[in-house]
Image 1 (cartoon, rainbow, N blue to C red):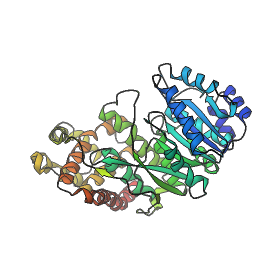
Image 2: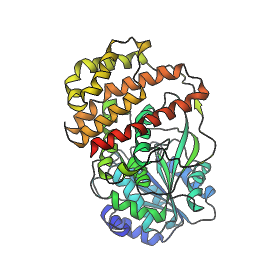
Image 3: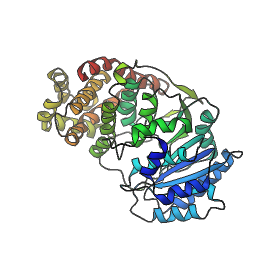
Image 4: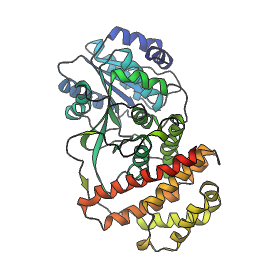
Amino acid sequence: MNGAAAATDLLSEASLTALATAGPVDVVAGVHVANQAGRVVEWLDALARSLAEGAPSRRAAVLVADAGSRDATPDLARGWCDSAAAPAERAWLDVIAPRHRARAILGLLAAAQHMGARAMVLLDADLAGVDDGRLSALLEPVLQGEADYVSPAYSRTIAEGTLTTNLLAPLTGALYGGRLQQVMGGCAGLAGAAIGSWLKDGTGAGEWQPHGAELWLTTTALATGARIAEVALGRKLVAPAEPPPDLASILVRTVGPLFALMEQYGAVWPERAPGATVARRGDPPEIQVDARAPAVEQMVHAFDLGLKDLLPVWEQIMPEETLVRLYPLGLLATDEFGLPARLWARIVSDFAVAYHERLLPRDHLLRALTPLYLGRVAAFILETRATPLGRIPQALEAIDRAFETEKHHLVARWR
């Protein structure tokens, strides 16, 4: 599907007319927003100022799409767009139902291509602040012709983002050959020339929708061989509109799309050599000590309960050679607990194969990963407690290497 067809499929006739009226632009800031009525106007005002300061010599536009709000966010955002002094400055995109994050993001991509944008910065309005420095960092590698896709890297504490550091990022890097800190970072820079080819892989219905659009975009950039850069953006601050779902649901919404994309790109990742690096801008992101010690004992207890209650399910997912390495862990005290990265990579590999082979209902299978994930997080926190802060990057790299080593086994079983 080309860009024009994608725009027609995703956007209302009124939105297409507005885009045609606005005409071509150099830079687009595409915002997807949901349930942020209390702050959306102020946030968009700040974005518009930052865009004007960060790209003062370029014709720029802010495009806004709703990602399934249940409050007054769409009305407020549409009113903000309609208040622009010049039509080219802002546009509200009416995404054709069903409205969710994936269709909002795809609609923004299609609109940016429709307007002939040279560069685009894609933003989640849950981000607490967007200044001109961050916008410039995401746009400059694209505008200078150095990158097709720009991914953020954030400063964080040791125990922050463990789902990313211990699963999403290392598995993605092992599969597609590029190590990135974030695979779902809330923002990205994109080259307009690359968007059309990515839309062809995204506009069809896929099991990664509606929650995995950011992961799809990162994966697609890696899988298609795009030129990728990573830029340091400091701390990632967010103001989420709603409380996060329970952990099992989070795993369904993140690991599920990751496994689904393995199927979509099943002709690509088995042939990719792992361990490739990407171009990086800025100093390495800072790693900080956690303000509060995570509740490791509760995590270990959850693992122990899973070993007792979910063993019949796990036996349908993991082969005996994996299970025999898990049984002894249920006998360990909290301060002795360990679930090594190599074993964790094998567990994730087993779950990916079981997902692919549909050994169980997929939602049920992904939820069964929860106690195992908590066990890995507990082990990671216990490992890093005894690790000097300056050596934490090496501990994270060891996780990457574990997944890269496991890939050979995963490829053999997948085929």
